Length: 236
Image 1 (cartoon, rainbow, N blue to C red):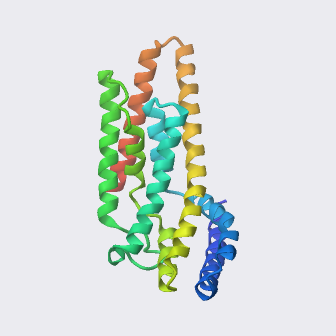
Image 2: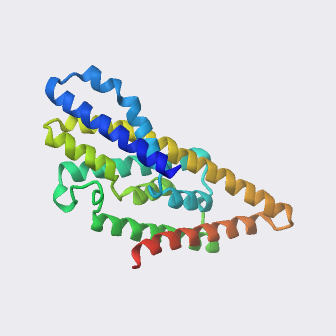
Image 3: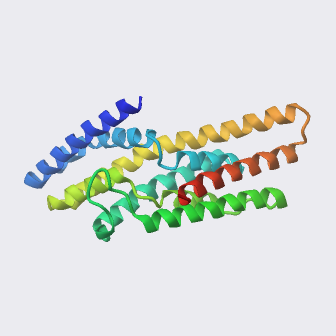
């Protein structure tokens, strides 16, 4: 499955490169817009490969006790931040990024900030569960932004290539399509995680545990999982 996704991304990336070159020559917006559905597929395939905050999102969704809608907003915030950070780096601060497919997306300062913020979110989930504190308004969106600070490497490639062709607007257009694809996958992960949380809570409650205690246990376990995921990417 992973090999198929990698091959699919390679094929779509090559097609995008050709379309960007064609757009640079004729500025035909209709031809460019016609291939945007392929950009959505590209984003979805990319999000299905390892990484992209899926584990972090799942752990947060399980431990946050948010509604499906709010968890979906967290997923959207992650997707938008993940892609937009790549656009920002390519346009404004590309000197801190290696301009290769292998090295693209390596922005150490942003990666460290992202992981530290996620450690903070994990600690807050654990402490909130232990202290019985209520959910904070806007917390979900902030968690999504923190997880999405690591830029998308393929978006960086497309933005670099489009900029080199003198048509950064073409790269930006494809980036918007990729946001949709990534967002669809991450939203699915978020909704599935909420369902899993509800199922586990019902299962434990059915075995005689009091509901408040069940919720606290689930929250603590999810917070610890988020801590492990974030800390594991900080420590060598």
